[in-house]
Structures are given as structure tokens and as C-alpha cells.
Image 1 (tube, one colour):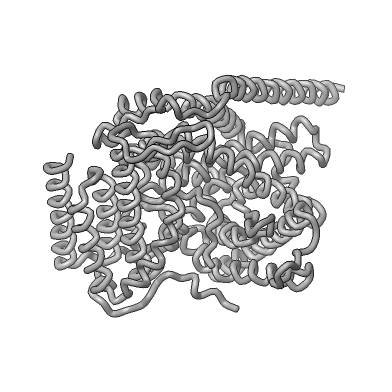
Image 2 (image 1 turned 90 degrees about the horizontal axis):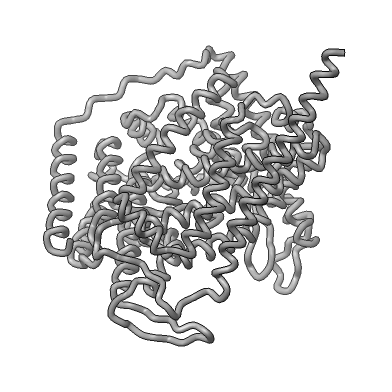
Length: 320
Length: 268
């Protein structure tokens, strides 16, 4: 039995060469920077700690629980690693896990490895970090923030990675946006619940046994806000691009051919044929976009408000 | 139980096993790159590529059935390309009415779908041959030669060394759960507890796996320090690539290039 939780690892042949190279470049930059940051934090502990914890995440992906009808919930671990170790270490660890899966177990391709690293190790980590920190700020250090934040972070890490995967497939012209995005998004919205529940279980266990490990990811943001902002931007991008692309696959194709992402073979202009429509999709997409933007703005505003209020309070205390 | 079967390396004394790992990695990626670049519907070229792979699989003594069996792993992903049959316009293959929808399948869509599936299948086979004919230390040497940061290469190495230990640990956790929570293989017998309860138990296992790994990494670090580790990763210089290996590289690359050229001339 090989640990192959979900069809989120893109195999070779599914992304055009241009898309693969673009995501390789982004991933190399991000992971290179993450390595530097982790090195500054951990020093010579970096190699043993990152290596063993990457092995633990790999092994942890074997853990599953029966849901119903032969299906099972799995752990992917992006959110758990982010919460426990911070975003930079989590990026390094997940990059190792995904690379080994591709190189040794053919779980995901080699040419498309850059894109797989981007989806799971960069977008997944940045977004789950943003979600977790935000909810935790809202909770103001109370323990429900850890659980609610953990669940939401885990769910969103799975969901954004799936949306990223389907967008990349659509840009490459290997999967039609109007079908792939709702399908991938829908399936992974369910899978994300399993991931969220396991993550909450793990956080509860660690909260009871080693509270100090969870403390490390709490206040005193030593990771800076750049990841938080990147996570917010990526979440916004997914929230806007996915419904738009699934509604106007032609538009996405146009962009893809304009920027030379698509293979110019047989000029595959993907079009919605008139009879093939998801009933009621028109209002729904608009509603989804608006709801997503509104939700993100509310969370954003509330987090800032809470943080601002707390800072003012603590400075006045200091003055007294 | 020890999970050494996880290791996909199959030691043999074949010609393929003896190719320099750096050359092998470059050739594998070049093969995947060319097959991704192949135009759709170039069936004879796909067949040539498949023949090339088959001969490599036979020379490597890995067994064609072994490679083919493993390559089925990546098959489920093909589902994501299946809707292409319905969305690419063109000559009608068939029309089907299901409830409110009329499903229109087109010939160009089918060609594109089958092309993607074949190209992906060829790529997976190449990656399988690489992993099965190259030992992990050799693969590490190859990625080091590609200028992957030394730090990342050392993390890979350490991860591989402890992968089996931690997979064993995870297997022990699962066995412990199976023997306590009534996870039964008997038909009709339900595993214990509600779904959230099961998820929480699994979460507890994940947490304890993480904790054990965390503490183990501390012990490993101490052991490394007491043996003189100072954060610097020291490695032997890479051995020079043999002249015959360069010949293999250039010959294979020009063969792939020729195939690609023919494919573009005739089907591009």
C-alpha cells in the first residue's frame, strides 16, 4: 500500500511545458527563501529536524479513518505542519515530501513537480497560515481559536490546492475549466472536512500533552506578515479566479493562448456548447465571488481591528 | 513489520542500472519533456516512444509487467481530462441526452483526451524506470549535480533514512487502533464510534506521530552533535562523468529530438 491520499498530485503530461516552467520558477524562488528563513531560525538543527518531520508527514499521510461506503479520510498535513512549525519550515517539509513522492513513488510527475510544490507546499501553507493566524487573533488567545483556526486552516489548505490544480489544468488546456473547477472544488470541499477533523484531533492531543509546542505558533509573530499577506492574496486570487474561469472558460483559454501557456496543437479552443449548462450557474458564480470577497474583507477588517485594539491596550499598560 | 517494500529500487546488474545517475535523471526528464511536447494525435510517434520505453524496460531487467503494473497508479488522474471529449467542438462522435442536458461528444475532443492519457502514461513509465534502476544515494548525487541546494539535498537524505522508521511507527499506531477500537474486517461489522470520533482518534494518532518524530529529531541532533556535526554538510566531490556516458546522453537526446522533429513536421 502506497500512501497516495488524493488525486491532487498532477502527473506528467497534464500541464503544458510553459505552465510547468513558470511554476518551477515560482517554487524555486519561494522554497529557496523558505530554506534561508528556516536556516536563520533553526541553525544547525535544520537538517535533522526538517528531515525527520518530513518523514513524519509522509508517514502521517498513511493514517486514515473509514468514512462510509469504502471511502476514507486522510491527512495531508500542510495545515498541521504550518500551525506547529510556522510557514517557512512547513514549506520546506512539504517540498521534501512532495519531491520524494514524485521521485520515488511516481505520485505526481517530475516535469510538473514545480506546480505540485506550488499548489500544496506554497499556496496550501500560505493560505492556511493566513486563516489560522486570523482566526486566532479573533479568538484573542482563547483555546477555541486553536480548534476553529485549525479546522478552517486545514479545510482551506485542501480547497485552495485543489482549485490551484484545476486552474493549472485549465490553463494548460487539459481539463475544461467549467467542469474541472466545480468538480475538483466540490470533491475537495468534502475531503477538506476530513482533513480539518484530523487536524483538530491532532491539535487537541498536542494541546493536552505538549502545550508548549502550540505556544510556538501563537503570539509574537516572528514569521512576519509577508506570508499572511501572500496567503490573503492567494486566497483572494483563488476565490475570484475559480468561479470566473469556470463561468467563462473561453476567457481563460484566451488568456492562456495570449501568454503562450497553451500548446498550440490543433488550436483547441474550448467552448461551452449551448446545450451544456449547469442550471442556475449564472447567479451562483456571481454570488460566490461576492460572498468570498465580502467574507475575506470582513475577516481581514475584524482581524485588524482586534489586533489594533490589543496593541493600543498593551501600549497604554506599558506607559502606566 | 518493516516496510522496506516501500523502496522502489530493484537492484539488477543491467546496462540501464549502470548508466550514470546524473545522465539517467537528465534523460528521464528529457523523455518526459519531449513526450509532453508531442503534438496530439501523432499515434505512430507515440508508438515509437512506447517501443523505446519497452526496450529500455527489457534491457533494464526490471520486467515489463512490473513497470506496467506500477504505471496504473497514475491512471485515476486521467478522469480530469475526460470532460474534454464533451467540451472541444468538432465533428460529432455521438450525442446523448441525459435528463436536461444533451451531451455532445466530439472527435477532436476524443483525440485530445487519448493523447493526454498516452503521453502521461509514457511519462510515468519513464519515471518508474528511473526510480527502480537508481538507488536513493545515486539519485541524491544526481539532484546534487543539478545544483539543488546542498541543504535541501541533506534534508532529503535524512528524510529517506528515517522514512521507514516513521512509516513503521505509523503502522504500529494503526495496528494499536485496530486492536482497540473494534475495527473489524468482518462483513457488516462497523468500526467503532461516529465519524467525528474516528477522525478525532486519527488526529490523536497524527499528533502523537508528530510528537514522537519531534522528540526523535532532537535525539538525532544530539547524536549528530556529539559526533562532530557543526551545521556544515560535507560531501565528497562529484565523480567525473565517463566519456561513454556522454555518448549515451548525446545519442539519446538526438534520438528524442529527431522523433520530436518528425512529429512536428507531420502532425504539428
